[in-house]
Image (tube, rainbow, N blue to C red; front, side):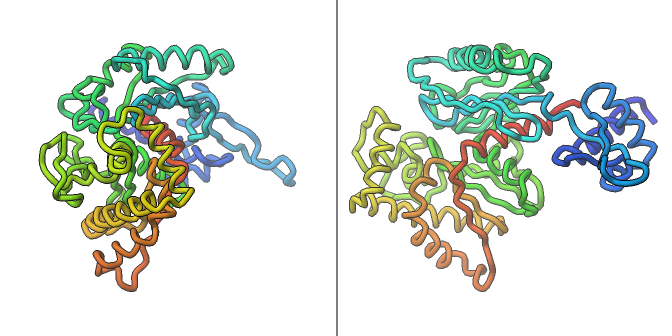
Length: 385
């Protein structure tokens, strides 16, 4: 057997062991062997190695039980952190730090409207990390990587951002910039992929999930038969320009008519409500939310119209991927309670095969945290333990 194969097998076995104990309060070597289907000898040897490397540690399972007390293996999860940058909204940067159990240690938003280039944004992120988080952090912690959520697609072939909702990041080799400034392995993905990875890593046992994330752009993350749908270059699941919107409206990006992003993303909703040429989109969005809460008829009417558009888009995804769970997240979740009835009625009309069947639909009101968990999960999966 080639040496490289032996090394790869060892890495796979180490990964299996760490995966087994990651969310547990402790397992015996016997329990790890049963879960991983590895031999007890392999588990014992690799656990001992990982303990020496301070990845795992050993405790007693139950000090109150009579007789011989078995040793228990746990993950040193508090000693390994991930750094998460959320750049999917224009003029806003989210910075978070999570441990490898996906527990949030630090999370804060910053106004970056004065920053003009992606390089400036990443330098600012590094500065905030070093000044606002590191002084209070354990100096012994290892940072295993940094991930960035974007409202666009990280092209697998050219390693640049394409079809980006924020013009400043379009065509930019963001991964290279992040790695240069932070000196850590960097990973870039769109917010909807990260969200669906997060919910998949949580309590749900489903292998078929669709996550619609609508904020600066309209994106969808898809888990089909347990696997994230990416496609050949990473464009799998791109829905922004599916023509199920207003067919009289011309898209300023692709110059075609009827693109769904012209209706559902936050800038489009603001424009459709307040008129073309709005400068402070976030301020206007918050004003629109206030009008929704005040039950201003025009605000409610727009939300209900968009509920039908959202239902049409969701119906296509449901018919193609047959998910067990459909999530709706992003900023649009703030008005979902107004949209829900028309949204559900549209799905029932469009998805005839759902008759008598159950489809779980979840509104994710904490999608910012969901994105960070997705980033952390992405980094963990790439971690060379």
